Length: 249
Picture 1 (cartoon, helix red, strand yellow):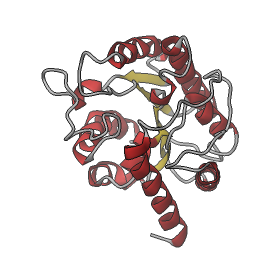
Picture 2: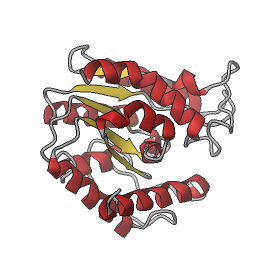
Picture 3: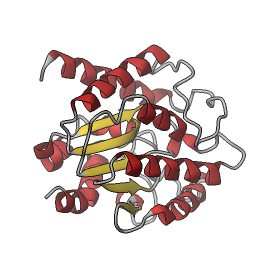
Picture 4: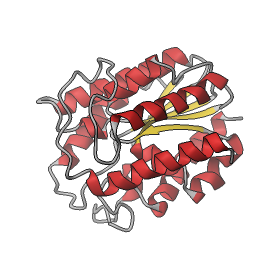
């Protein structure tokens, strides 16, 4: 691991670690349209705006090299996958670019894509996971979150016309299956599924892979009821591996 990669890994690790304990304590971000690209506009206790800008610059530098053929775009759920042994075992052979930024909403990802994180990349496979941070941030959060995810998927399809784009549904949150957020996530995923054309854009809702038979999201899988521990990351890798391997040939 070179000095640049080591610095990036340490920065991402710190951001994800603090996000585990701080996510429930942070106030909601200022409202903005989920399809209107905007950069991070505030400091969080677990990631100052300056750190977000630094990571964006480092992601952009990786994109500018244009080497990765497997690319992941999204939020902190992807950031934690960078250190997963299961992910290294499953996808390490492809030397993937993992652009996961803690706390990002769809509008933040759109801005990042328009400002360097596409670069000269010409991937075979692109995986998108974004949207969980949009929930509860607007009056029509279900429809708005879905619009934002679809906008990200279409942006990626336009940027990478030869790639297969795998859009993942928002992952389940909260331990209790009766939680108010569960039906929101279900409806968001139903709306987003329509973006799939079966040719360039594909959709998968793999949320069931993280749940117990009774629908509970155990703390062995997700300690903070949002981010995933290694077992959850293993299940994630296992769920998308057939698609990735088939289309990386």
